[in-house]
Image (cartoon, rainbow, N blue to C red; front, side, top):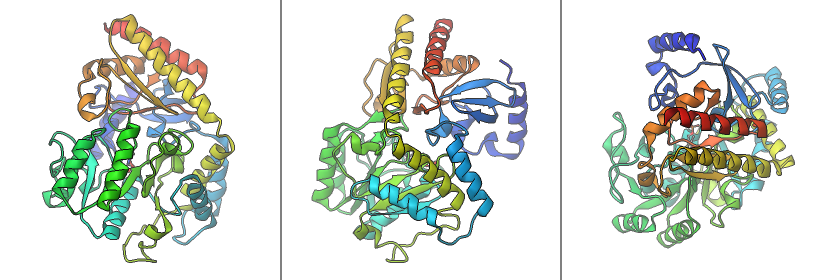
Length: 428
Ligand SMILES: *Cc1c(COP(=O)(O)O)cnc(C)c1O
């Protein structure tokens, strides 16, 4: 497989774009090698500018549940494009998409659309702070909620301590209200509530997908809900990734715990830039223009993005059984990867939630980010490179979730398993 054109394109991009990419993970820094520049997608495949074809297990990091170039979504987008790209005024599509989301999520009466997951979460935190009139919030190490200042606090700084920023350019003053707790460890959350009486909310990915795939335990979520109630804090479920991915209803089909605010993105835009946050009518009434909490966006609810999202959600609602097929395929893929690693005497732990899958080269069940860090990421890097050469496009980090689309066939799953077996044999 030649990457000649991509190598050249990467050098050229490098000269005008920092790192040659518009989002850091795409640069392949943690696995090595050159990122293939993508020319086009075809269902479950992507084709790079050198003409290499890959089975795509990234699917734009989640949004494309129907794979690339889905006809129904294409038609909806084309007809929207013909009417104009943006008006900055209300359109019917926004209300339709909002109705589907509201009908789907319990305790969510209203949603507002924004243009990214980052924006959705940033706005949700502001809403929680404005509503409770408190400043602090709790987040979990290893959970990613976009790159806004106060949320860019991650691991390493210990549990239940006030966070320090993980990026230069984020003033410590802006992260001093961010308290860090450990995923699936309720004691660490109690500690945070002991340290501060000013906690507006707890934000969590109920199915964490940004430290590999690490679902929260039911008991942990139940206790988290109770702690929020006892302390007058709101619970935010960040379902930007898991919404319409882990199941039709996101985490709701997998836990009985309900959040006060949810954030969505990825699938609800079907590949277009869309995010959303929603809550009860009472909480949402505090948002401008009904209330005083300000939030806005020139391109929010963009008609092209809304039409893509609407076509995607309507297709999902009409075919809820696809989640059974998706999960079956994701399970088979993980079973096959596990077989492949067993054949070469390497330990692997796997996880599947609907169309999301994750695996670690590790013998330790992963419950939180600290566990995840114990994986053999060097082996992952080698595995990633070999798989790429064999036409299998996996996320370029050991800490990302993989995705199956409805265009990912059983044959493609078997192909990926066969290539995993070959790859590991070549490495070890
Ligand atoms: C992707 C993601 C975000 C950020 O969304 P962007 O559209 O990349 O800004 C936030 N939260 C979670 C859980 C995500 O997976």
